[in-house]
Image (cartoon, rainbow, N blue to C red):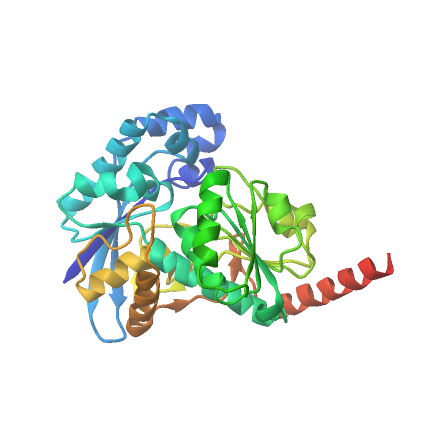
Length: 365
């Protein structure tokens, strides 16, 4: 039976408290100090993944104790070694391919330094994350009555590995595209790449401020690596669809609380074929997983033991290929979720009606 492993780490103190209840009573700084010193270890054995073609695989979640801010602020070599330590645990378990979750996919030049120090191939899962994020965004647009051929889209974190390919795909479907990132030179380079061959059929804006990029966008894909929220209620257009596969989230929870006229979806959440038992609670309904996790599973089912999504630049061809392979094995978008709960069609209809009323009120004013 083919096998895989996937590295996870706590996104906040609440994640730590699921395993160690005392954490909820400790200051964040103390929790971070303790997690920094915690060795990597297996968290669970994953069973029951069965392809629609009949193939079965097994896997493991392996824990790396660092929290988001530590991945950014600690010395990079220390962080890389912590991820490599988790990778070696995966090797000892017999995994044939390793997936990097959340911030572990960012360090070491997009995972390349991790792969160089391990005996098994490594993938970030970013290709399938792109595929599902774009699919969720377009499906959300359809449900909200947005004409993609006439709308403006924005990508927050556009110059990152995920953001770049999202931008290239959106550029084929929308007439206006805003690219947002912190580095002006990288934005200018990406704008040139996005515009190549468009012959005036696409208008591109570049911004280093989130608000300016998204304030008049009907579609927003936010894929930054910020440890803090970037998108707030007052910055969004009524009726907008915002896809936020970033972890930690780019969209503030205040958007869900205050903007009942905006559709926010997680993106990157898929149903896993078979009767999967993860043995670990990462806050999703039974049988569903992040797309980055699912990419690792798909590659194991295919017997494709190769470093598939790695480095700072993803290949669009691989995004399309992994989406095709995932469908073949029975993986599919798991409806819509936002802020740890399902978003049903009835709620989307209410959001759409609220957006219509808000737009009407703006015209009156």
